[in-house]
Length: 391
Image 1 (spheres, rainbow, N blue to C red):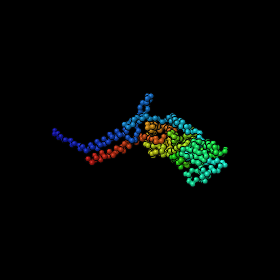
Image 2 (cartoon, rainbow, N blue to C red):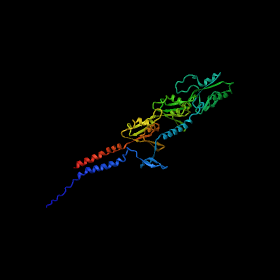
Image 3 (cartoon, rainbow, N blue to C red):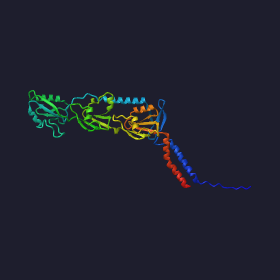
Image 4 (cartoon, rainbow, N blue to C red):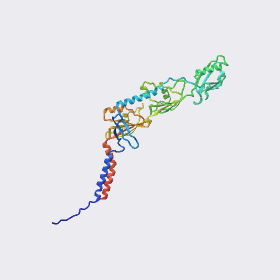
């Protein structure tokens, strides 16, 4: 019997290249599917100090682990009550009875000494006539920058900080040295010493003069032309001296506090914020990612923000993973809402967002898988093309 020995022909190496490239791509694809960077917020379980399970955003090199607060009706109620308590405490400090107007530097006084027309010559022939320019002071006696009033025979009288009736009494006493029972009348001719400033989202921002009629909050807004179209009535800042107060007009009305009882003082700055300054950001699996603006009353709930973003994308969103990221005094705070339950929509409606909050809706696992595949397909196609060329 004869045997023939045939040597096996070696398989060309290029036949294995497509398989190798595909294997490498598949391995990379599977490893990437676990993280899907940029499309997933990694959340892990941990133990709280009391021994109960809690959720945390996984730590990275740039950010430590952050605890996640679960949103429910009880928490939303407590947050709303705490916010109202802070606003009540601040608001009651502003509701004080207005004081009487006192004369200051720059004010113009009209002084009449009855039966003595010669005193009228002291203010010139233009007394009682309209000023040529709106910026010109009315005819009368001007209080100088040191708060003094110069009047014939009475000399120099310090009048800054005095009421009109007090000035009238001092002039009567001073003129009694030269006149018998002088009859003196003092009136305000022009208010120029005390002012408040209204800025921001009003139609006519500028300076308003304080008069003997106390200026309240609504009067100041009305004299400034009213709220602008983009005004946030819940965020009105009152700067008084070194203190800064925030006025939430709808909240004051809800508490039974009348803003017309809030009187402004000399030097106050009233600034109405714009709704554009208090927007929030909606990201992730929503139909129209972008910024959401508060309503005209300044309120913006989680449900409102999602509605402005076109609602959640039902095809790609993981409705169990909805987050609100908030920075408070430089410390990040994360809230989580599982929106699969119908009750969660009530929580979203009651949970009020704060300016510059970030609402993030995570994607589901299939979406992350598909996105990783789309990222790796150029690599796989390149490997297959190289294998074909090598044949």
